[in-house]
Length: 211
Image (cartoon, rainbow, N blue to C red; front, top):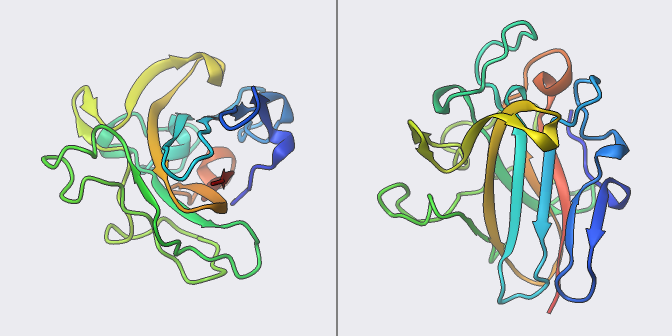
């Protein structure tokens, strides 16, 4: 399952060069388990300027990032050892989608520390042009953005997230700088199950960077 998010799935607040857009839970696209609760929430603080960073806030239910058994009765994904997610950046067209975009820099405060990451940024996944991922990339292909120990990490786990209907999950932010253009920003997930978030491979939102 590799859905894209389109304009009807987003709520835009404000206008001009710095609107904010966020998940429209009423669209149903974010309710991956069909239980009436969103499993995936995203909010973008859009700067719309090459020299400014775009902040993306994520809130994602445990099952969507679960590295353990893909069994609805045994959902893990609630510890750093059992959760994983990677980031991809591509052109928007589904045909001949290009996963290699020059000039993209993505990071967050945890990755900005060299003690946590040598190049102080989130390495993106790389796929052949037009490729749609069918399994989670290898450890050498892109950084896992959910990293840490104890209560300190790149994302934070919460027992209840209001935007997800009180479900437990992960919350965190990334910062994006890139060239002018229309792109898609993807979260890549450890799919392999048979329904709901267990079958989620990736989720993309449109990113528009203007001069």
